[in-house]
Image (cartoon, rainbow, N blue to C red; front, side, top):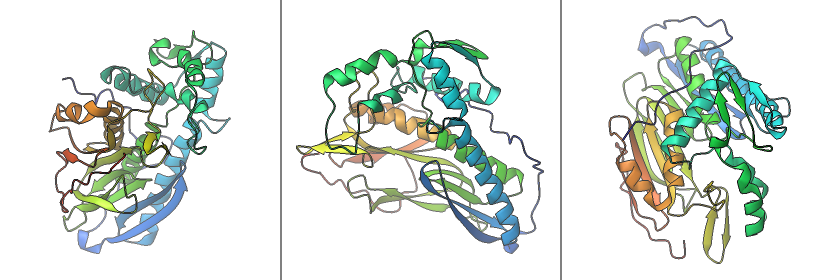
Length: 342
């Protein structure tokens, strides 16, 4: 199987006077934490540095980069670049894109191809039919009315220009934007001299390095059936970790759970897995692999097992509470707890 990890967007810092720095001995480093809110999530950056001022400077630069990415690619902001792209798409026009945006869209196209079309950044339009706060299911007619506007293959790709021959298609980078931001924030901290730290954007993580004494970071994996509890703990010293699940946005009717991850071919939620966590070299890769596995439904666990073990590790939990995978450093035993009616 070909690796879905390339091409990756360029993660080199942009638009800032960043200079590589070297801090003194590890014994002089202290942990400093900086919480903030961005991309619709509670975020926190944990950094080891000689002083609060040096840690705060790196954290501020990281937060600024996250906010820059959000301003460019948020579908909720009418002044964002993504909204400008979608206005062109609504008119069936074409638009020239910059290198960063082309890199993100190229990566999304790779994920689309490697997932057999399941990972699709045009499928966000289906949210017009699905209101997960309403407690009601959409009609088949509502869904079918939107399906003609779903399909990344309907976009004409001629870099640096993309064209939208089908009027009304929308792009939504919600499946990769936060993970990309976590990677970029971590890269900036590294350039600023941080060698030990962790960027956490609402559960999408990028680890800059272990604690100064060499100990890994201990990270809890949430139980998809009891979100206030952890089902496992993993220890990581670097790379990214992301989780995709159906437990936060969902509708439950007649004992059946309808999650927010939708099959772009049918417009209906996928079934089979409740949660997938993936550790990879970058958060962007971890997040897209976790989402692709969830979108494969009951075949997701088998698909994960086919991925090269040297490139990613994973933990899956299905709707019956069974768990498995290759994500190492699990400290607490995973207990298979069947959940009747799920």
